[in-house]
Image (cartoon, rainbow, N blue to C red; front, side, top):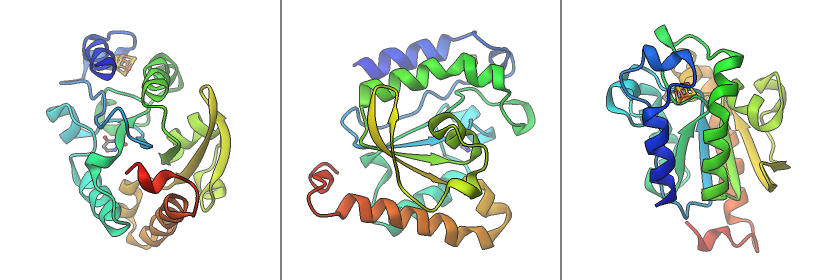
Length: 193
Ligand code: URA
Ligand code: SF4
């Protein structure tokens, strides 16, 4: 499977300094046929230990948010902009994002999702070229992302809502946009998930 081949290269990757401090690289997971992809920022502590995306507290919240719009994790593909954990969960550096980006581009071209949900500032930065997640969130973009026009839905990172629960309704609203997009008549997406 092509995704597994990409994942294997990520697990062996030493293209940026993050490989020296990681326990495990976190390639991402989900079905090759997924029509929806979620792109987070970078693995945290639990993800680094397990080698799987969004398995810690932010992941638990993401699962809850997905369930609230009738989606399950196994129906989507989940990955991150940067595949190895930055020490102490610091922000990934521009040169780390640049070094890691080819993997995300490969994953997007293999899965070829119709909708990409950008979780947080760094993901929205890579997918929409935006600097401020608060400024861009709240709507659905139709833009060219690595080869073709796709819908991009930027929202806050779930970890932000863990720190500040008042932000949770904003993510819920944005995922409501996802739900509306999926169920919009004639989108064809309702047949895919
Ligand atoms: N935060 C992320 O951005 N990605 C993960 O996989 C976990 C937490
Ligand atoms: Fe390679 Fe990306 Fe890990 Fe850096 S973060 S070592 S580029 S997989």
